[in-house]
Amino acid sequence: DGGITQSPKYLFRKEGQNVTLSCEQNLNHDAMYWYRQDPGQGLRLIYYSQIVNDFQKGDIAEGYSVSREKKESFPLTVTSAQKNPTAFYLCASSHRGKTDTQYFGPGTRLTVL
Amino acid sequence: AQSVTQLDSQVPVFEEAPVELRCNYSSSVSVYLFWYVQYPNQGLQLLLKYLSGSTLVESINGFEAEFNKSQTSFHLRKPSVHISDTAEYFCAVSDQRNYGGSQGNLIFGKGTKLSVKP
Image 1 (cartoon, helix red, strand yellow):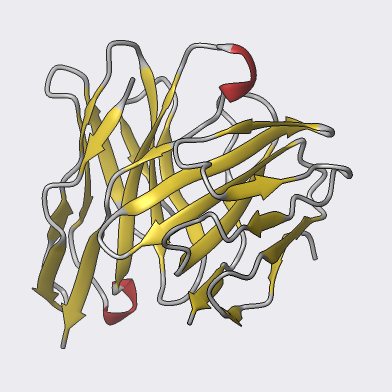
Image 2 (cartoon, one colour; image 1 turned 180 degrees about the vertical axis):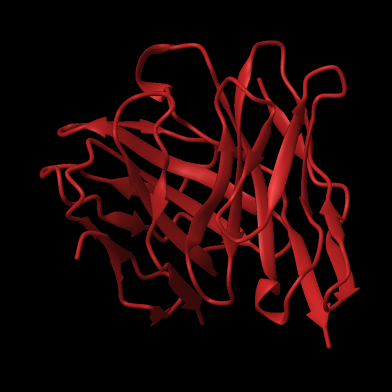
């Protein structure tokens, strides 16, 4: 089955630690996205990548980093510089065209203790 | 820049009643419009989208939305809801222009939680 997988579903970390969230897709999509979701805030774009080895900052990139070494993978690192990292993180992918639908993964809920 | 306003954060309704979830957008350019649905602890699923053509678009599970350019709205409606429609619904827009690598980026509203009661 084609789709987007995110792992783990729940993640706990101590304050001050970096943590990497996984996102893999087998839909042959060029574009991939990371969003952060907070209660009552909707989704906010962290980073996006339209092609391998290239990525751009979204609206709230501070304290996050990404890489795009493979078409299928777009991992997100939440660094210790992110002041309020506890949130639900959603990865999405799409073809590159401007009308193409974004497909979402199941999400990772990160809790920083 | 675009923005999306979902006027109601929560909408409680009884089963089999009609429902309307409101969405207004602000943009200086033409946009594409989307509604996504999110069930608890899951990702988002596309419900329907308006790209061009008929301003009334429908989903396979009975929802419909109408693009109203003069009112900059894209309200979501269903004539009779089921318990299984309980979820959070997000309206989103994207810029129709092709401006480099950011085509396809979505701007989301804050969501409306639909709660269907028996």
